[in-house]
Image 1 (cartoon, rainbow, N blue to C red):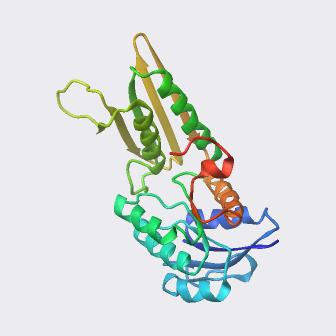
Image 2 (cartoon, rainbow, N blue to C red; image 1 turned 180 degrees about the horizontal axis):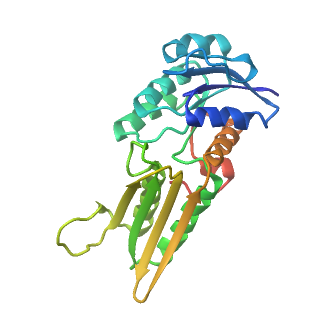
Image 3 (tube, helix red, strand yellow; image 1 turned 90 degrees about the horizontal axis):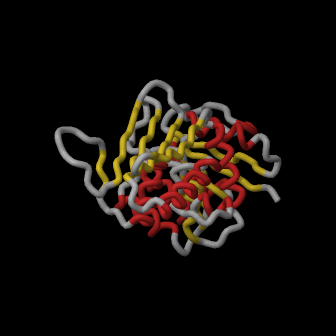
Length: 260
């Protein structure tokens, strides 16, 4: 069975790497690519980058099995709505959505198509989330800090991966207060601290620190290359085509019990 794939953000860094990763999967065929830049660029299989404004018409013509989206939140919400209307399954790796945008996507997807929406496709990150869940259950009275670092061009902060980690920690510990950075004179309260670093060309570095009397535990994931994101996205695209309508995480793709 051939899985027909379309990609938004096709000429961007992640879109390009996803297309390269697809070359190792013989049963996948790229049938369309879209972007607001790079129009006319030749992609795999003779596909050219089309203007994002043509998304609905070209998807209706090409009828892909899945649309992979690596764009920006406002564009992704629109892309998701169009694909869902056409019955096309989705893999969404865009991050930085507001609660309203998340609700809008849920409304477009539910009951129509299957969608994998995750802030991080890397398999090791999904194990990272599971490990911090286990640690948080065991270290209930420890202080918790989340530190993430990314390249200087990343716009959203904290990262989607860090937000997912915080959601897990909040759920397990019952701590509601999240403190983003610290300044001035104040005692630490019952809170989860979150810190974002933007510098150089850092691909992605996430640390969750648990600190108690006389000790600390650090759980860390470090991404060395964006190729890890791309291979995970391709794996999700192969999985989502056979899934029932609904919204899934990478944990479902990997068969893990932890969902951020």
